[in-house]
Amino acid sequence: MRKKICLAVPALMLAGVAVAQSDRPNPLDAKAPAPQAEYRSAFEGYRPFADQDLRDWRKANDEVGAAGGHAGQRPGQGPGEPTSKPQAGKPQSSGGPARQK
Image 1: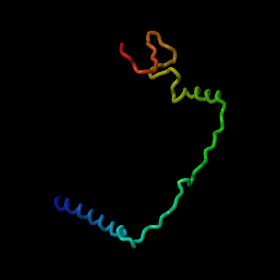
Image 2: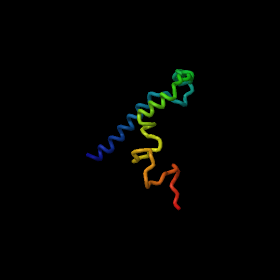
Image 3: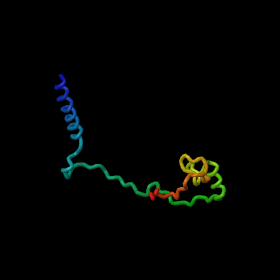
Image 4: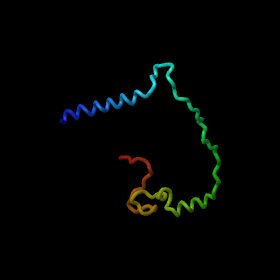
Protein backbone atom coordinates (compact mmCIF):
# COMPACT_ATOMS: atom_id res chain seq x y z
CA MET A 1 0.00 0.00 0.00
CA ARG A 2 2.82 2.34 0.86
CA LYS A 3 4.56 1.74 -2.47
CA LYS A 4 1.37 2.61 -4.33
CA ILE A 5 1.09 5.92 -2.47
CA CYS A 6 4.76 6.70 -3.10
CA LEU A 7 4.18 6.20 -6.83
CA ALA A 8 0.77 7.90 -7.00
CA VAL A 9 1.72 11.17 -5.31
CA PRO A 10 4.56 12.14 -7.72
CA ALA A 11 2.45 11.06 -10.71
CA LEU A 12 -0.43 13.31 -9.59
CA MET A 13 1.96 16.21 -9.00
CA LEU A 14 3.44 15.89 -12.48
CA ALA A 15 -0.03 15.68 -14.01
CA GLY A 16 -1.02 18.88 -12.19
CA VAL A 17 2.05 20.69 -13.47
CA ALA A 18 1.34 19.58 -17.02
CA VAL A 19 -2.27 20.84 -16.83
CA ALA A 20 -1.17 24.18 -15.40
CA GLN A 21 1.33 24.73 -18.20
CA SER A 22 -1.12 23.96 -20.98
CA ASP A 23 -2.97 27.27 -20.42
CA ARG A 24 0.01 29.38 -21.52
CA PRO A 25 0.73 30.20 -25.15
CA ASN A 26 3.78 28.67 -26.77
CA PRO A 27 6.67 31.18 -26.42
CA LEU A 28 8.21 29.94 -29.69
CA ASP A 29 5.07 30.82 -31.66
CA ALA A 30 5.53 34.31 -33.16
CA LYS A 31 1.77 34.77 -33.62
CA ALA A 32 0.87 33.78 -30.07
CA PRO A 33 -0.97 36.48 -28.10
CA ALA A 34 1.11 38.32 -25.55
CA PRO A 35 -0.06 40.38 -22.59
CA GLN A 36 -0.11 44.13 -23.11
CA ALA A 37 3.00 45.85 -21.74
CA GLU A 38 2.26 48.35 -18.99
CA TYR A 39 4.37 51.47 -18.56
CA ARG A 40 5.15 52.63 -15.05
CA SER A 41 7.54 55.50 -14.47
CA ALA A 42 10.43 55.01 -12.07
CA PHE A 43 9.61 58.44 -10.68
CA GLU A 44 6.03 57.56 -9.78
CA GLY A 45 5.47 58.65 -6.18
CA TYR A 46 8.73 60.64 -6.08
CA ARG A 47 8.89 63.36 -3.47
CA PRO A 48 11.62 66.00 -3.87
CA PHE A 49 14.03 66.60 -0.99
CA ALA A 50 12.89 69.12 1.56
CA ASP A 51 15.06 70.56 4.33
CA GLN A 52 13.89 69.80 7.84
CA ASP A 53 13.23 72.60 10.27
CA LEU A 54 16.29 73.23 12.43
CA ARG A 55 15.95 72.99 16.19
CA ASP A 56 17.95 74.60 18.93
CA TRP A 57 20.90 72.28 19.55
CA ARG A 58 20.86 72.92 23.30
CA LYS A 59 17.28 71.68 23.59
CA ALA A 60 18.09 68.62 21.46
CA ASN A 61 21.09 67.80 23.68
CA ASP A 62 18.97 68.20 26.82
CA GLU A 63 16.35 65.79 25.41
CA VAL A 64 19.00 63.17 24.63
CA GLY A 65 20.55 63.59 28.07
CA ALA A 66 17.15 63.23 29.79
CA ALA A 67 16.52 60.01 27.83
CA GLY A 68 19.73 58.45 29.17
CA GLY A 69 22.14 59.37 26.40
CA HIS A 70 22.46 58.16 22.85
CA ALA A 71 21.10 54.59 22.60
CA GLY A 72 21.06 54.41 26.40
CA GLN A 73 24.85 54.99 26.69
CA ARG A 74 26.46 57.87 28.45
CA PRO A 75 29.86 59.11 27.26
CA GLY A 76 32.69 57.09 28.78
CA GLN A 77 30.37 54.45 30.19
CA GLY A 78 30.88 50.94 28.94
CA PRO A 79 29.07 47.73 29.85
CA GLY A 80 29.16 46.98 33.55
CA GLU A 81 30.49 50.41 34.55
CA PRO A 82 27.93 52.31 36.64
CA THR A 83 29.59 55.75 36.27
CA SER A 84 31.69 57.59 33.74
CA LYS A 85 34.30 58.56 36.37
CA PRO A 86 37.59 56.63 36.41
CA GLN A 87 37.65 53.89 39.01
CA ALA A 88 40.63 53.39 41.27
CA GLY A 89 42.90 50.51 40.26
CA LYS A 90 41.22 49.99 36.91
CA PRO A 91 43.27 50.78 33.77
CA GLN A 92 41.72 53.23 31.35
CA SER A 93 41.14 52.02 27.80
CA SER A 94 42.03 54.12 24.77
CA GLY A 95 39.23 52.50 22.78
CA GLY A 96 41.59 50.52 20.53
CA PRO A 97 42.43 46.83 20.56
CA ALA A 98 44.32 45.55 23.60
CA ARG A 99 48.06 45.14 23.10
CA GLN A 100 50.27 42.63 24.82
CA LYS A 101 53.59 43.86 26.25
